[in-house]
Length: 134
Image (cartoon, rainbow, N blue to C red; front, side, top):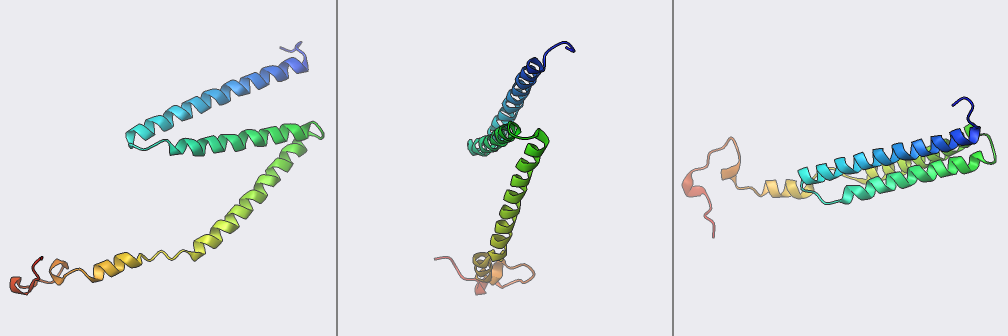
């Protein structure tokens, strides 16, 4: 290995990384399939995983492309800063939307206020005072 050229080692590294990513992807896919069977769900989780993998590979491609024109450390830092900005924007947007949500279940509160006294705990209502279903 010490006598091998730098290009050959890079090719072997790329092949090894692709094999590792393929096996990790297959393992994760099988695990998701098993969970979908266990919980009787459809395959919607696969779309999320595919999106994750797309973003991952596009980030690696951007890093690799930038490494052709600058040092790879700086290229990695630029990609990381881009993702930091994306995360900050998503956090700010999500936080603003979360503040607009009112977690009080108004329909449930209204429904519970209409429950007959006979079904409420702690009080006993005589039978002749209960309404009969029609």
